[in-house]
Image (cartoon, rainbow, N blue to C red; front, side, top):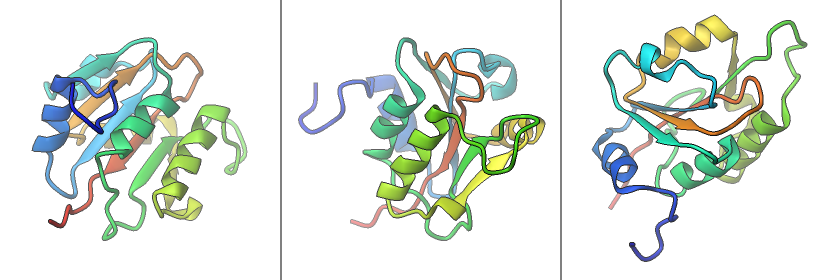
Length: 146
């Protein structure tokens, strides 16, 4: 255990988040996501039983969002829905990034297959136990100033 670190951040997950440089992306995906296939050999850390919101909150507690990227957060757009439609899990992620100082219009909503393409470039995928459809997000790491 470490003082002040969210207890769901496992040593393995902390190691991968720490190793990422600014401008790299982490995917936080639902239980049905094809993480192994789309990771292209990059690390996949599993946190079963935990929601997209819970895991995103933990990741963002140690992970600043990029300020030099127009849209440092991405969610998977719900197919065949209006552009502003959000599931409760997606809205929870938007609320978290808003608290981190990122405006809602800086959260990109990508069509399902475009999201699959984008996540191929992620440095890390964290698979949650999120059971709702489209419970997938990505975050771009910002610079940590010491």
